[in-house]
Structures are given as structure tokens and as C-alpha cells.
Picture 1 (cartoon, rainbow, N blue to C red):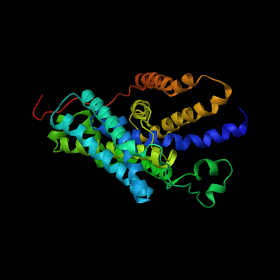
Picture 2: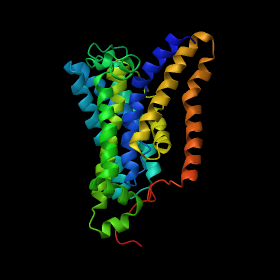
Picture 3: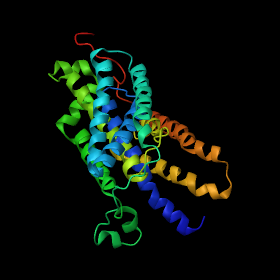
Picture 4: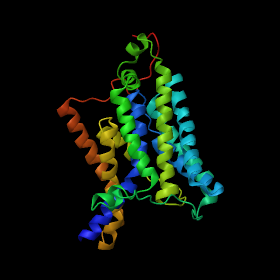
Length: 308
């Protein structure tokens, strides 16, 4: 692989990893509050189909992106109600949400199959900065959704680790009973974080259908939601580390297409993201043990007020 091919693949890794980044940021906040949401795939695919449908009908991609965020957030409330209010098993609820999302998106999106998206977000090179050698084309010649994702990484990381609301979220995920005794509304915090997770998953789906691949393809998320869940662990529940992990997977996704002309089996190439997922989980588990960093202690455990 010559330098030009490698360079174009490196630049393409950023937009390819952006859907993973949005979904991972949302899952980090949900899990930090103690809610394990395995419905990320379902929320992403619903965000993709709703974003595409609204953008196509209105001619405004930003309205489609907004609709995707709203749809993703609303669907996440199904999981929130089941796991927080009804206190059902969060794994079962999340899996059900994924199956519902995949089914509904296929039904809703049937009318859009084969319809191209004439309206899409274009790259927005930042004056002066985009002309910097090497760094400019890589970081400052992207579309607006990529720039927004970077702002979200910085903002969500700062809130989580350096503000009172962030301490509240982390305390609810670690010891909800203690947080409750301190006057924190555990149920409200978990609802809000789950809703934020759904909105960001919806944005990740909309990026796929409105920006990255401006078309609707049934099942187009292709496991991106499951990868986002793995990236949450790889990131050690930190928005900052999620940035690196998302672009790593974005690079692997681009690599799939770059290696096809070499005659490598397409089935093997399709396995690459999932092989990397396993390797990432193994590496993250090793780092958790080495640094003695654990997942939120109350993750996946329903909270009942007054229970010891």
C-alpha cells in the first residue's frame, strides 16, 4: 500500500468512525448512571431511517438529523421505563429494543430503498487551518457533524469529570442508595442519561444515512451499535478515550474496502470489525485489571428505594 492510499484511508477513518463516536458517547453516559442499554443498534437504525426520511421529505438534512435525535431519545425511553420504573432485566429489555428497532426500520424504510439522497452535508474546510500540511486535511477539512462530535467529546468529558452534575451521574452509577440518601433523584438522573444516550445513538444513525452514505439501506448499521457497546468498555467509560476507539474502528471499516482489490475474501474482510471488537475487549479487560479500574458498580442493577 503506497503512501497516497494510506493517507486517503487515514483521512477517511474520521468520518467512518463518527457514527461509532456518537453512539459510544451516549452509551457512556447511560452506563455511568447505572443503565446498561443493549438497544444501541435499534436506536441507531431508527435514527438512520427517520433521519433519512425527514431529510428527504423536507429537503433539509439538519431537520433529518434533529428528527433522528428525537426518535432515538424517545425510543430509549422504552428501555428507561422498563429498566428503571418496572425494574426488568436490562439485558432482556435492551435486546428487545434492538429487535424492535430493526423490525420497525425495515418496515418504515421499505419505501426509501433505492432512493438516493440529493441533500447531504458537505465538507466544511476551516479557513487557514485546513491549509496546514498534514494536520489541515486530516482534522480541518471535515463536515459539520464531525466538528460537533469533537465539541461533544470535550463538553461531555468536562461535565462528567469536572462538574457537580458529573459527580451526581457517577455517584448514581456507583452507589444509588447513597446518592438517594444525599437527596439525588436517582430515577430522574437515570432517565435523563438514558435519553441522552438514545439521542446520541440516533445521531450516529443519522450520520450514516444522511452524511456518510446518503441513502437508506435496510440494516445499514451492520452491528455498529454492538461495536459502540464494546467501545464503551474500551474507553473505560471516558468520552476522551472514546474518540481514539471510534477512529480505530473507522479505520478498520475503511480498510475493508481498501483491501478488496487485493483479492482477499469478502467474508474475511466483513469479519474484521468483529475480530477487532474481541481484541479490543480483551485489551480493555487487561487494562481494567492492571489499573484497577472497574465499571460502574451498580451497572445493570435495578434500584429500589429503601432496599439495603
